[in-house]
Length: 158
Image 1 (tube, helix red, strand yellow):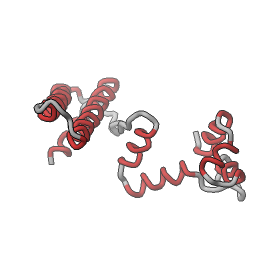
Image 2 (cartoon, rainbow, N blue to C red):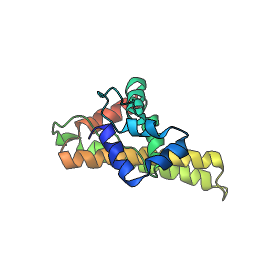
Image 3 (cartoon, rainbow, N blue to C red):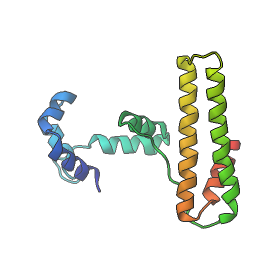
Image 4 (spheres, rainbow, N blue to C red):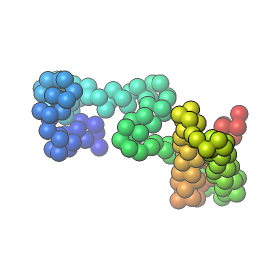
């Protein structure tokens, strides 16, 4: 689905007039976002701008932040689809290690029976990493591919 098509669908549920008012933009600008970019009246919409920013910065934190704003989290899928089940045990070990690391951070933070904002931030960071590693493992299980999981673990170890 193209970004302008998605926005056109979104504007079936969310009033373009209300969106314009909330964002402090003209109604015509909102409607232009839902037009194909090859039309002269179309405008580069915010989805395409964000996609470009992510592509050129190569920084996944942008998408992670957006996902957090929507109440979720971002997990990047492994790129390779070549089966290589020999990496299954190391991939499982990585998930277990990440979980152990999370428990360690939690135990250290809770040692004084209180959690400071800095400790909460550290716990959140470890939790996000555990979710990412686990999702990569599950994705690899679904495809029978552990080569990418192993490669990602090696990159993190460097």
